[in-house]
Image 1 (cartoon, rainbow, N blue to C red):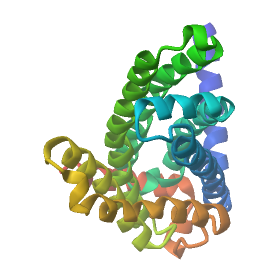
Image 2 (cartoon, rainbow, N blue to C red):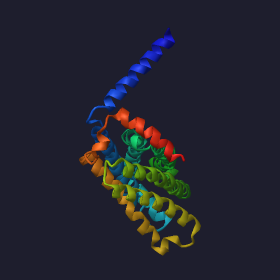
Image 3 (cartoon, rainbow, N blue to C red):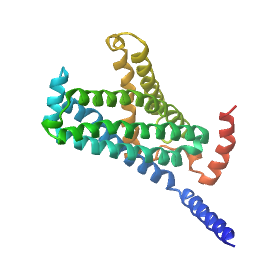
Image 4 (cartoon, rainbow, N blue to C red):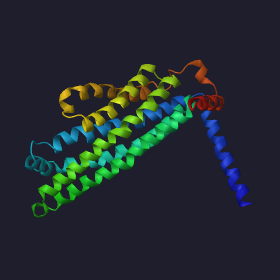
Length: 267
């Protein structure tokens, strides 16, 4: 009897989920929610991964960088807090995008989720090094160890370099799904794919090619990353208004058709 009761509960939950997905405004609501979560990722990411580091870690040598850390300790702590928010939001984002884009290809959507979520534990592991720096800074001059601080900071930056791999790879199936779904302009999907390739190419170039930074290729490959901001704004403002009439079928019918199409992806 308990098993029957549990199965009945699961069936009721599934029925509620199907009913919610069959609502005409379901894709539009999912797109808006995805855009909102994406906006949180973008805003907190820009602050904690670009704006704050440029000020907190300023300096041309170890002594200047440590001095900057001491002078901007509060900004460093705020940056860490917002980086945590960024990673939590980035863990949720691919799940909402999966609900929106899975009808365009379930296997691609699962790859997108797996690759995106892979980056989150790597990001949190990197924050451990910044928390060590905060501990040393809070300990005052008596516990200040310039060599240890720079070692922790270099470990953090090495982790950030490694994050380029999942940050790039998840954009490739994401861009493909954007193109297939027709919820947004296909050009955005193409730019997302280029941005993803650029992340990975810059990582491999910096690792394998001598003087890669001096070649000027890295900045060119970074340009398509702006598509993440564009897709965020589109989802947040436009929602799913770009979908064609064929995409306005009930979600259950779309899912059934995509299951057959998803098998084609594996061939």
